[in-house]
Image (cartoon, rainbow, N blue to C red; front, side, top):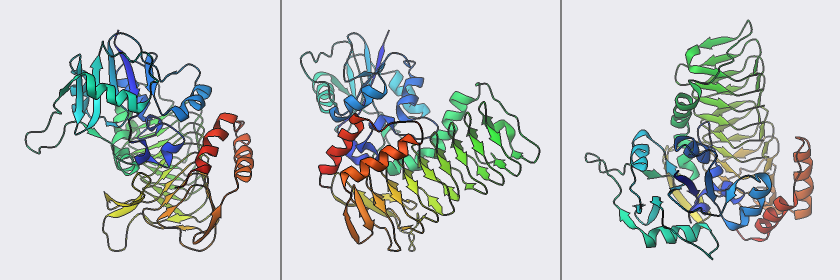
Length: 418
């Protein structure tokens, strides 16, 4: 039986601040995370191996004791880059990859299949895997569309790529994984449903009177035990995760994915919430990527379009400068455990690092370094003991703990200069 190995490569910092505290393969895009989609399509849900940065190994082993992390088995193995953009065409080429071949895009490893790769005595890390795959096997030319000359297999390059592929993947996941799944489609009087065959409701979902589910432009999935309060409007394609709460009068537009146990209000468009996040109050959030344990205060708003309609630039942790995202619409990228106060305004393409606590009337713009504290333009370093205290309180409210392994990860980030 062929085994699946999903590996992060050496480009993880291009997905900061979200990938500071998780592997790239654990990022959400569509209904599923990147890892979950690859596992599902390659039939290896119970027999896959995961390669991540060493600094995350202990944390993820603590969270998932059954995962096979930073090891490779013997025998026939299919190696897949976690950044692969899955399409019907890319799936076809990946499944047809010959044994003892390595598929490259420029200098980046996309996939490989081997029964001979041996790394005995070496620590299995992303750089080691990438170098081994590039060095030991015959490269296979990346398939190209003969008309457009575009590559038939694409790797995501940034969080902006995930944001802008989110709507497509919600539809993809709906048709691949929810069409045949048992649907608990029951609605109370007063709930308006458009295109009901494009809607999937999980067990325990509660929809209050006045809710509108409009799946005219794409599917809607409301997962198990989620609750949508009165007069909320949800337009597809949208995913609302398990145990989420959508507040009274919320307006959720297409291209939005909300990870589990989040609370969402106000106006949200084309955005991804990794999970365990709060945006409970009025305010606009558009084309944003929001980490876990984030709280956006009442009337926090972000811009996702420049007044001159030009492409949005945003800060790169890798190059430490702002780079053109190639996107006309791009809101904010917000790292885990960051909080904003009431009435905060966030400029187009702003990157807010991990563990920040921000407030005040000054425009939040460009790049806010990790563990920043205060008003934009008057920032200081968030004390680590104070950060840990708040993080512990926040997680305890959800019956979870802020573990020693987590503290170690955040302490390492706290000491780095960004």
